[in-house]
Length: 357
Image (cartoon, rainbow, N blue to C red):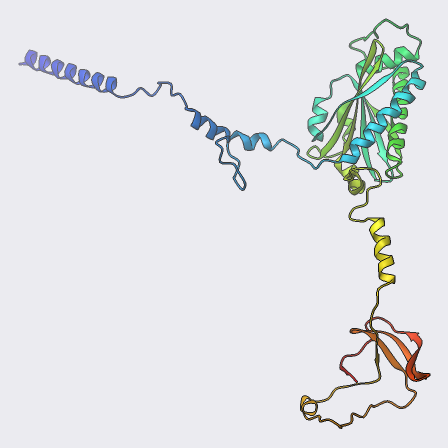
């Protein structure tokens, strides 16, 4: 009996295992790789073509756009930097007694923290203070330009690249020479802004650690100008950073398309309008008296009725243009015509209401 029951139990167990294996083979495996189609990929990235006017961003597009800085373009600022480059090409030639060429690599907008994290070290950061705007800016000189300027100013021979010594801090001589270079750059920047507005970019301090040059909040937007300085076979990069908060006092001027542009004003049309106004004819009404009378009295008037004026002979009268009282005058006679002589000018808005008689 026991042997038969064991055989039956084993047979039932084997049958159940066969059924489970068959069901598992028919069902899809959870580890099977699933390939996304193009529509699903576009929807995930937020490029499904539905983001037209008023559409919401979705997916990774929203994450990417959160780190971007999109600010209005300042046309006059580009002209100021072009003028600064031309001035620097001349002043740096006099400063180094060498053939110097300065060019703009680009003008971009970015957040202040992103720029501080991207500064290639070692470098020197000159902090400039703008007294008129009550704010700060940065002038960053990379190591290649530092050693090139030091080599040129200390009489290095031409045709040899500046030697860079790794693993040591900048010496006092190097810091002093770079401070003089930054002073020359700030003087040219001041001269470049002079046609636009009077402002002075003064040297405040020199730093070698970006953490000590935090002149703005990390999330604030800034304008970065990348300059390339070439001295024959030597040279390097110089970067100028101005926060938008620093430029805010002259934002209206920087929005101009050209120097001296006037928003909505045209002196030619102003002169023409003034000349035409002087030759314009206007009608003046001489108001002898004003009375408030009931409408029934006005309706009841007939030909031959008289309206008594509440003024005595010789009382002053008013000259009015439309509803505006302009002058007070005396009534008289010139030959066969009534005439008035202006005695004084009335303040605007003093004319009283009522029906002129």
